[in-house]
Image (cartoon, rainbow, N blue to C red; front, side, top):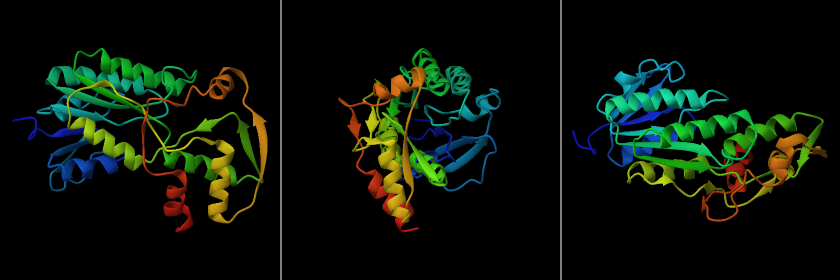
Length: 258
C-alpha cells in the first residue's frame, strides 16, 4: 500500500470541520477513514470506525494501514489526554504524518481549554512522528453561536478589549487538506479571518442581519483572562495566512438568507 492508496484517518470527521474536510480529501482521490465514537454508514471511498480517544479504546484497529492522520476531534476538555492516546497508537501503527488543528493563543491564554490544546500540540510534536500543526482563529460558526445566545438577552454584553479575527471553517478545511497531502511542516503560519472585530461589532452585525435591535452594554473582563484578551494574545496580527470569507459573507449565507 502506497501513501496515495493508504486511507487517511480523520478524527472528528463528523464534526463541523470534518464534514468539510472529508469530501475535499475524496475530491483529491484519497480514501478516507472517519473516526468517531459511534461510527457511521460507509460511502464510496469512505469508511467509518468507532473508537474512543479519551479512553484510548479502538485506536489500534482504526489506525491499521494508515500513513496520514488528520486530528480534528476536540472538546471543551481532555484534548491533551485524547491526543496522547492517539499518538501512542499512531506510533505503534507506523503512521508517517500527523496533522493537528489547534487554536491561536494556545501557548498564551490562561484558560483550561487553551492549555489542553497546547498539551495536545506537545503530544504531537514530541511523538517522534513527522507532524504539522495549524493554529486557527475562532470559526465563524462559534462566533455565531456566541452572538445568538447573547442576542436573546434584553441587553447584550459587550466585553471591552475582547477582539476576534474569525475565520471560515471552509477556509480552514481547505488549508488542512493541503497540509495533509503535503510533507510534514511542523508549526505552520496561523490561519485567521480577513478582519479583526470587537465582540460588540460581531453582535451588531448579527443583530442587523436579523433585523433586531438590542442595547449593547460595555463590560470589563476581569483578571488574567481579561488582561490576556486586552493584550491581543488570542490574535495573530503579523505573519499569518488569511482566509477569504468574511463575517459579513458568513452572515449573508447563514442568517440573512435563512
